[in-house]
Length: 314
Image 1: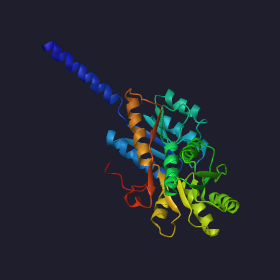
Image 2: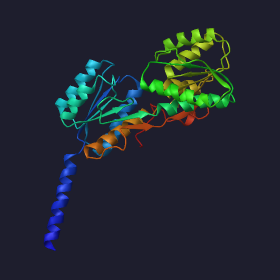
Image 3: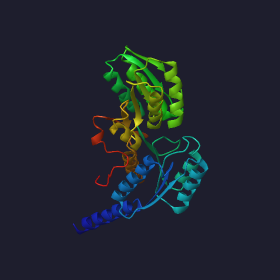
Image 4: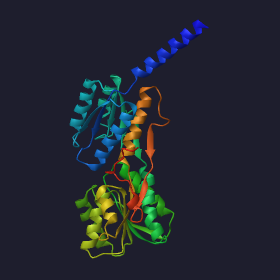
């Protein structure tokens, strides 16, 4: 009996030692820009989840300011610092592969958030197809399945392509809806969205709905409609950013009616959670984890827990 107890104790000590060896002691975080509310929420979500795992975890959080060379340097710095995990919003889905592989050779797990990166151990992104679908289903329902719609496209990246595909899939199920344009690029920006939409609305006098691929383009599109004295257009988008949250609460911007929200706080929490599992030998069931979007409208925005909301309660 004594021998069994001693053996069990030795086994428990071995397990405890192994768990301690794989504890998350430090994490390197590289994000687009820490001046952007989306990335601020990502950083807060990562910190919250990491400190749940280890209250004393060391976080090295930097913005690469959309400079790919700077992001590569940050990854090198994380390797030199001996972090256990790297969480990054990739500046390019392909170009970072050598830097990621270098980190992995040093025994570091790499998780991509918001967009995928070649070679990453895992990725966590918004379900952009679903986001585009629910954003466009909103105006389809409002219009009773009949009307003309403009899809204001954006940069040719996977998230935008998925959003447009989701929107088109919803419209395809409503034979009374007609897409007037879907190939004009608003560059993901307010001013470019304004210019593109002014041209489209001048070209098409009969428009009932607009889907813009992100919130900045939505704000530009709404301004274009106002400048051309167009009213009674339903405008929807994807993001759920602070600016659109304010617009949905503002009676002076009634044409902006819905945005399929991303949740950067949840994306980062899930990314860290998967990273900790990987450190302990547990791989995710799939390489890319999709986080569903929730539609924020003028009716429910008062209950929306947006990017800048306090999430420290969980």
